[in-house]
Picture 1: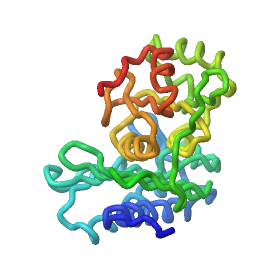
Picture 2 (picture 1 turned 45 degrees about the vertical axis):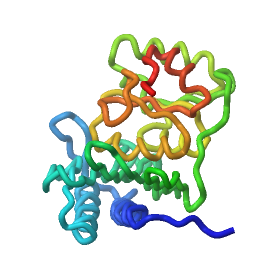
Picture 3 (picture 1 turned 120 degrees about the vertical axis):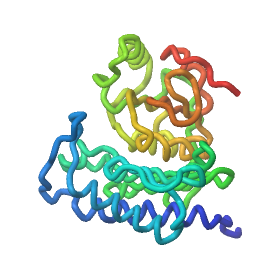
Picture 4 (picture 1 turned 90 degrees about the vertical axis):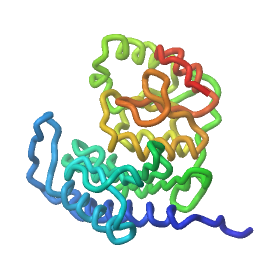
Amino acid sequence: MNPPVRSPLYWAVEEVARSCGDVAFSHFRKGLVVELKADGSEVTRADREAEAAARACVHRLFPNDAVLGEELGSEGDATHRRWIIDPIDGTRSFVRGVPLWGSLVAVEEAGVVIAGAINCPATGDFLVAVRGEGCWHNDTRASVSRVSTIDTSTILATDQRFLRTPSRAPRFAALAGRVAHARTWGDCYGYVLVATGRAELMVDDRMGPWDIAALIPVIEEAGGVFTDWQGRRGIGRDAVATNAVLAEEFRNALGVPEPAS
């Protein structure tokens, strides 16, 4: 069987995500000094150095493309094409030596995310997705699960306490009482588990565009459904990711409007 033909964009996204993750991983469990940003979130020099490495890779490959990153801001003209980078998604895990973190890289064109990658070097999970080319997990085609009943499903949240909207936490708690497993294997790693068929639902509250962008093509190209809590596709301010079979049932349980077709 011939291997799949992958586009130059696929290999470029993989290269940028790998450069970002390699730098981040070189600092993992090395006793970094932790700083607090204005919003109370944690950051280290590993975040900044990893993002700088990713930006340098983008500039070398595509000097005319714009870049938006969580730590180093925005540069370039985003009307053409924009790369969106979160150098370490899950910094709280990273600084505590927990391996459930990753480097996120996405490519947006005309307001649509066309490619994304999640590189989790501490767990050995690397996913790359390009629109129309599928989602690939360590060079194997990734697919969401076919679990079709709530009572046999696994659901995830970064932290239930972060579901700050009054109606969300009770609804998630009620759903958690119906499923086989409810866990807080959070941040980008939860979406890795959904995309690779090891969990059926992952939710997050109050996210930035760098947290979300890469997740969209990864989940959708793996056959899943990705929306915000208002049922809208694309980059929003929060996230609900599911397999396809249970997408409607999960969203009904959470009070999320049905996604527009």
